[in-house]
Amino acid sequence: MTQPKPKVDLCPECRGSHYVLQNREGRVHGELCACFKCPECEGRGHVFIEDETGISSLRECACAGLVQRLKKLNEAGIPGKFSGTQLATYQPIVASQKIALRIAKDYVQEYGNSAQGLLFMGRPGLGKTHLAVAVIKDLILDKGMDCKFVDFFQLLSDIRFGYSQDLSEQAIINPYVAAPVLVIDELAKGRNTEWELTMLDQIISSRYNAADKITLITTNYLDQEANPKKGGKGDSHVEIGSGNGRKASAAEETLLDKVGERIYSRLVEMCRFVKLEGMDYRQEMQGKQTAPARPRKKK
Ligand SMILES: [Zn+2]
Ligand SMILES: [Zn+2]
Image 1 (spheres, rainbow, N blue to C red):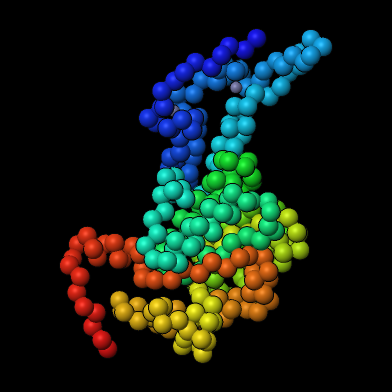
Image 2: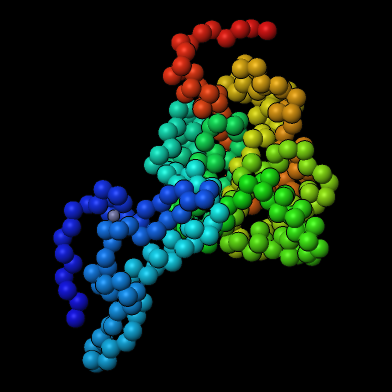
């Protein structure tokens, strides 16, 4: 017999979610909140359910699902600085950020309807990683999905390490191919060797060929049409490589330039491209806090 659930006030630690997330050794780590004592199973993780014929059987308690989801979250490799990151804490300033947030929210809500992932594209500081991390946290905690987060540099260094250990190429790339949902953060950052791009191509191609893999990507590299200096249509609202003294040269390479046609065309099919435009939002906020606005110098 189960007792009726006692009424409790909303816990200030977890606000009723029954879990708390923190940065533990550089990774997002979640555990059950101290307030949580499952009234159904009293912490055993299972309950006896009696059917209409009076036969009772052992069933997993609903709370065991939460424990499993927290375990998945802890194994996802999300950097600890994102422990508080949620879609609800993303603060859009410009229109493209508002649109990106809406797309991310819809994506979580309608997850499973589309075989595509998302590719957040735009200048640093617009919150692309915030959105990608928030999406997978929701997919793990609300939908129980297995998700993996990897920074592009980490991905390359893992590959190089695997190679130095004489692992087969298959063994090296398998963790990234196998993940049902994979975030690759800062794709194409750095100067990539041909060999690194070959390995990336294998990961992307394998995920592309497996119809059920979802890939989310963030990249600072833009598309041709958003980059007027590359001969595309351009957009008068986007300032490319101007203002705030940023060096233009590297920034003007497009994503296509960086990853090559083969990977790029697969990304186009695998992901919905979400373009974020505007100033560096972190710099902007810092500027507002520390110094009065001043007119930008023309060069
Ligand atoms: Zn609590
Ligand atoms: Zn329980």
